[in-house]
Length: 379
Image (cartoon, rainbow, N blue to C red; front, side):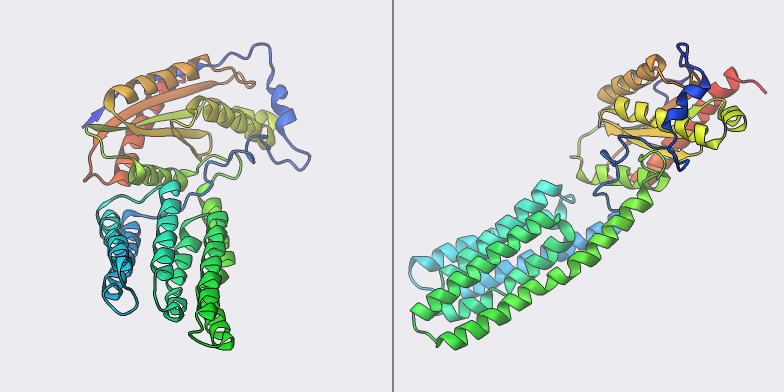
């Protein structure tokens, strides 16, 4: 059951003395409509189109890997590799892997900061366990665990945290190698050979960096409207799904949509050309981006249709929707065209199909918007 928050309305944006030709400066010499903010603020940046099933599989694999590393520590602690108080420290470090793994199994996909924190936790835990070994030569072999973390870092976090991880792992390997030489557990040649082998193993996943970067670039391009820099239709649903995955479970929860359509665009294109029409669309996109203020997911659905979607508590979202519609009423654009607006909301819970809910609520908001358009421009 849908709850219409704002009904429908037609918003008149005064021209304030500007003619339609006033938008022509937005058109570049090559005929492409440019936005100065488009390249500074790419809403699709860093967004990957992962559905819930794929994300669940990745969380399962990471959780199993974390659990395995913890079990390795527990199995190694009572062996001849550790002695005295070091055994207890390694046991404690290994036990911390179990709640972390449980978080991967049962929790949501973490945000960028938590992903980086997980890599830091893994690096520190592995390093401590290796440096506490009585037999430093076996610690060199243990550095292969850094290869697992490197693989995860390459695909899950930006390049800088990944490189910091690699530097840290290399330093740990160097320290273990020096300790092995000083302890005279093997000749320097043997230690050097083993160290270089391990370095190659946990550095080899870096080969994937270029490939993963290209995949991320293509993913961003497929989710962004090239004219306005806003999300396209696919990017809108992907962003809504990503937001739902990282938003804490609060009840009740509502998804709200605001649909907007620029009236009279056909006349603009017919009388002034599509380049001028593109400039009008960029102008509208800039206003929507400013009005959304990072509280809405904003998209250009195609043609002269735009949409904003947000998820939150009913009372907060009702006020936010009313504020957005009211702001659209007071917006001042160069074109002087009218904008028809419709809004709708639907209650969602943990079992809801987020993408389907977004599709449904947007469909209702779109119907309300076209009802407003027909009321203002009767056929």
